[in-house]
Image (cartoon, rainbow, N blue to C red):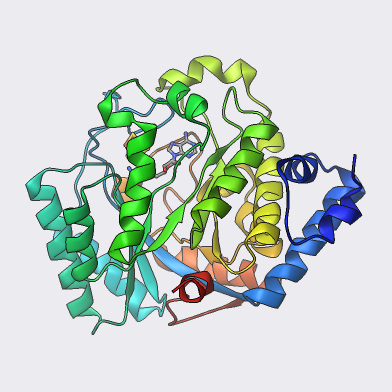
Length: 359
Ligand code: SAM
Ligand code: SF4
């Protein structure tokens, strides 16, 4: 087997190389982190970009077996934030020079939902004199919908593939047309065709998932030539079907550690993309996101969802910042990011450098 030092000196990585990086321990793990940190500073620099996250509705037509707000979870109180609440959160982002917002929700595709998102996009652009960048994360839609939303002002879209291994994808989703791997993959292509900066990602530490699957995920991201990645640890939720497999899981700390190695390996594999420090990292380690920023990530998504709704957007247990108000969140984040040796790119969209290089 190759030594880590040999692998880290490469610019191309095979599946076996990536498995080796994901299995690095102690000094070797430290070498991986140092190499990724250096590659990050040399390519995307030290700036971290804020995306204010607004989880504007938890109503979802889908039933993903891992997700706390899946359609069949009757314990969840369903909500839809009003236009004023959503615009208020976006105004906070704009006034605090966050640069961009992410509008995220459960997945719906009714004409009323499509129209509402369209109207919100136009209102956010108007309110901010077109200064706020907008990322959408509203699931699988038709090409017409994606196009319409793009024309109304969204320019980035996040749609995680969740797992690029079709077998594993099928194990964590119900077997029906609403949850088809091929459809999700097609959506990523449609988003690219519409002109979006495209982001995807996976959950790390899922039941049944192997290090080989994760190495395949990294190669999938590279092959798809994505502009942004958001990936984080899978965390169980007791009101979901996947909870039954919790005894097969790695410990939370092991999942956290693997997630950091995924971020570092991805930075080496795709040096100029944007990589988000996933919120799920913070559910395991209070400074988990800052640790990810140090070794490769360059985007963070402070939660701007109105506090009353946050407890109803519990995708997994221990989701952080449940009752922290947005201003407080900002102050503590700022201090921690600076401590981690990064600067905040206030007022900038912080677009993916990779997106412009691939044009
Ligand atoms: N409904 C849209 C979709 O699925 O693309 C966007 C919202 S969905 C809640 C956003 C992401 O939450 C999913 O892509 C999934 O990776 C993540 N997620 C859901 N349940 C999770 C869990 N138990 N642990 C970690 N991440 C989870
Ligand atoms: Fe709905 Fe997204 Fe959760 Fe799946 S992951 S159940 S699509 S909110």
